Image 1 (cartoon, rainbow, N blue to C red):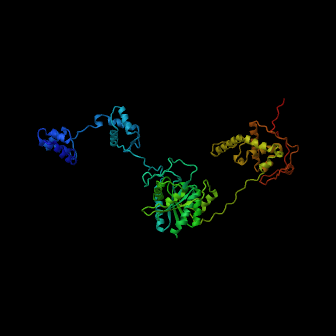
Image 2: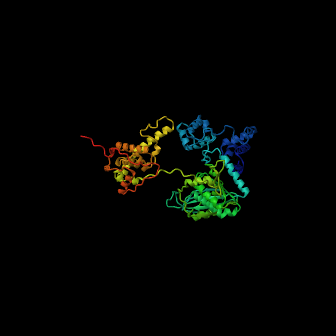
Image 3: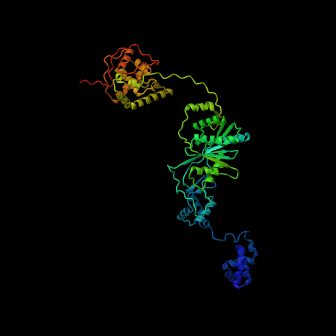
Length: 596
């Protein structure tokens, strides 16, 4: 027999036969050769004699071929046993090991694990099971595990009226398109720092000619950051993006809308009477921003348009049309190229086009937009009363600005003015208090802690009375109404005490000078005396005058003689005609010396 000829024939037939047909074909050749044919065919084909003998047996018995199911080359059970069959309890041990590092929803059909395949195989080897990482991967796939990345689909807490607001926005956009009115989607794009900084994406370049950029993206305090703000005309499929270099504020956002209207909107919609603005709930166009509303009110008055604003619910900004109709294409245009200057960014935006017909315009806005601007409360009230027209459904998200404000309401009558009084710097004079002005001010600062504790005590007692705890009005010694003394400073307390002790003025006269009630004078002077006693403080003070003033006229003459511009204020507190004569009080600033 010619084994070389058999080998050539076998080499031609092998690529066209599967394992089963190849085995049977070799067996038929061996049967045809007769005795010694199995060994000769095995040598010529380069296979084992066992394979040729099995094929010869199957060729002699056609019924043996019917035992194999279609598509199978071997009998069931043939081949090497699987690891879980050779090692009982392997799958159970693997499940227990995976449970220690399992992540995800316990009731989900697909879970994952933080251990690597090699770590799992190593842990199983320590527990007496010898398996490879490939076997571990097969078992995990059979149990529902797979390699998964994170999916950014969670939105956090969802508002109950989220879907209703989406429906309202879509309906208003369709209404505006049907009426030929402009409807725009606005938002601020991510800030970009200029310079040789890497960007995602690839571009066609000659081999080896890579664009060299910085190896890190750390912020540069001295660098320039641009703030693109986009306006997308939904019906016209046109984008307009002013690029600022200052701050992404509400004033910048409204300035971008104003520029779009002047350059494009007014030309595209010459008969427009309304402007619909769909925007996010945060950022420069935050629905809580007073500056955003103030600037939109100015825009409505300038353009004569009814500016209607509709905010997407918080946490749903990715459904804003500008995100997937404009910004994503600008990012694609900017990919794989560093933004060296603001002009590069503007040129990239202007070059953004799509097969669906999107075209963009861009411009630089080099004006300064400072942060921290506050709208006065009076202006906020005016916006609510005259400019804003809020919707009945979530008026905080859906509102409009009138081109012509509503008539204003008449100004309310001015309330009662605070009672007039003599200024503290006038009363703080050595001739009236017997103390140096700086010393009295320093003394007030020293006693401030005691004064604060006292006021807190009075406030607590007042709260207890308001909440009906049954506490008596005079539960705090010298309580009274704490609100009567809230506009007095600790310096006024000391002035009341010193005017009483130094000039022997009655409480009614002091009340007229300070513009308070006479009972309040008594409380203030008493508190000041208690503060001094508790602090054990005895500042230097001059002795009282030999003949203190006895009438208002004498008080004014005494002040004029000492160069004090004192006048008696008209505040409803009557100055007594004569100061009653009484014994001079012992000075609280000169403690009595102990007797020997």
